[in-house]
Image (cartoon, rainbow, N blue to C red):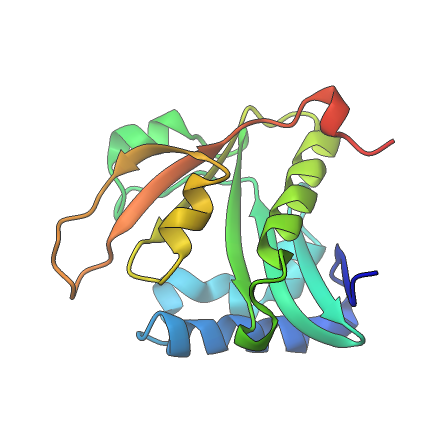
Length: 182
């Protein structure tokens, strides 16, 4: 039996979830908190718990939050992403995955994959999304291989400059009826 539980976040989980996110920005991404990109982290409750069609999932080890995954009813923004990509994945009909992070001591246990699976179930339950989109910075070790194992790349925005984000955009398959919980 796994020592982990994945569930929708409750208010008591928000401080732990925020800590996982901030640690990831500083440790894994190396650029820290950026208000223009990370405003949701300041208001997790308003962004994910109170907003219709949004959710925040947490992976728990006992009572400790050790992983996060979020869904928002928004597509990519232009700028910084190309306008054609924003039109392809419009707000409202696009479920965008955000904040798929696992604390280092709890990686390699399938938590990210399980959280993404639960996020896709949430999307299926909503019933009115047409696509599931995400993007990742390929400079993060393991990120590209992980997402390629689950999703199809739709746009490679890498320019080769190690000082710039090396973004790869993906689409996940929409869950089918057999993927929905019974």
